[in-house]
Length: 134
Image 1 (cartoon, rainbow, N blue to C red):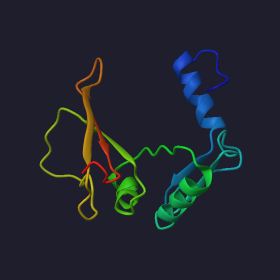
Image 2: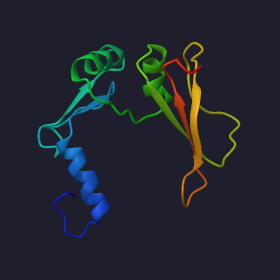
Image 3: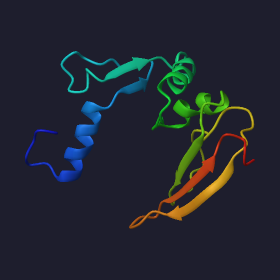
Image 4: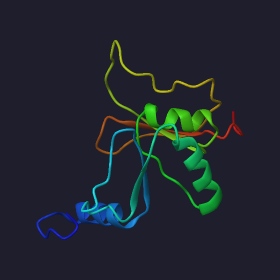
């Protein structure tokens, strides 16, 4: 996609990031093939290894880490105290069943901001997850 002239500017920018930034994928089933465009910058760690690896990255890299994923991915990180800020998007739907948003012990959160995302029905909730504001 990064080299495809028929793609729009936004998709080019996203593809450039995906193929140039270092990434850690938390998965028990995914593998990265040597010929994948992101192979040089992406590695996979298991769910069991994820908290230890994220703690190591936070300590050694000194920069910000961004995690995308479901509660299955970030719940263990939040429970281990590895999440500084949590952003939750809430959409307009009510479901009678489904997965829990969080599965750890009580996590102290402090609301930092709430806003409706432009041109959508999504509400963005930003929380301090360090416990300092809770």
